[in-house]
Length: 298
Figure: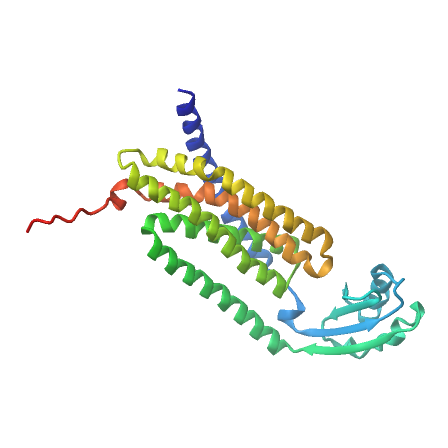
């Protein structure tokens, strides 16, 4: 009786969490459409300059001088060596500012190199990044369609879209810079979430074949219980790694780490809730995986 109550509560929890996920997904799409993204210089074009200063100089000392000289927010990121900084700013009429003269109050300045990313290159990067995301989704769709019956595959696919939309909505809402490292994180999230969804979907398929008389709600609940510990351990250890990267990776990896952190959380949630509930609502039954018996008689 206690086990039946637990399974009933799990079914109720799946339905409620799925409804919440759909609502939040619609809200996320609205946020993306209204606010848009704060595209980084990788996509919009701009100037990247690398300078060498005294190792005691901090970014808080560099930022005010650069912002005043270029009349815009200048990205100041620490490079691989102490005292070495990477400066990023839009290519405007202020791009002819003498950096050495601007930073002269802080001591001796050595300009190591300067590169310019034109708007056309940035546009091509944005198009190629979007194409990479589309190709990845189509490849995943093809794999899921081959591996599972379409109702079960739809749950895994919707979970993937759910995770990506959540990450994109976060960057649209906070207006954090969306650059190539964030795009790489989005592609990595697709792979991580897919792995989680396939583990649960595989278990559902096994139970559909092994226990054809069991109700689909019970099969989904049993699949979640059977894979729950594995999912929590995998997600927990991955979150620890990404958390360490977030804390210790510094500015260059901040966007990547935050995107991965959100993607892992939503990926775990969606695989359990949306990934199992949608096939159920689409009418998945054990009959769709019933083994065909071939008679030896003519």
